[in-house]
Length: 115
Image 1 (cartoon, rainbow, N blue to C red):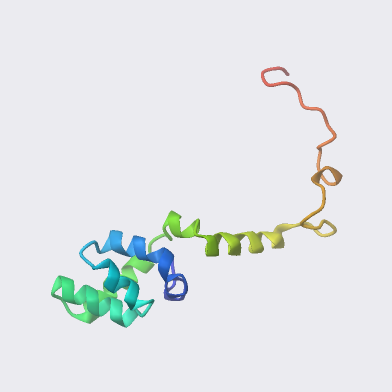
Image 2: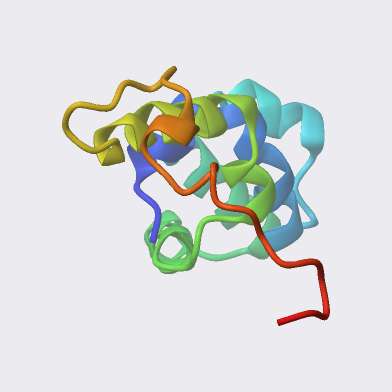
């Protein structure tokens, strides 16, 4: 599920998925919308000959879908995920610590296919 804040704050990354959902939109006009939901609804309404309210309902429905993978891999989102992963580091371990101090790196592993 996505929020409009995520979409508007990362408009460039969301432009391609928006064009996939509404391919009749003009890419240059979409870029100029710059995250304004009201303007996007107006553009969709114009291209589909429906009301802006109906277009906004389509946007809301689209927001309830999963975030597109290419947006998740966008540099901004990827960096945010990396920063959030720091919360998962156990107490007493630092993000730059050598894992062999905390894990089983000193234990020899059997070669592949041998027990």
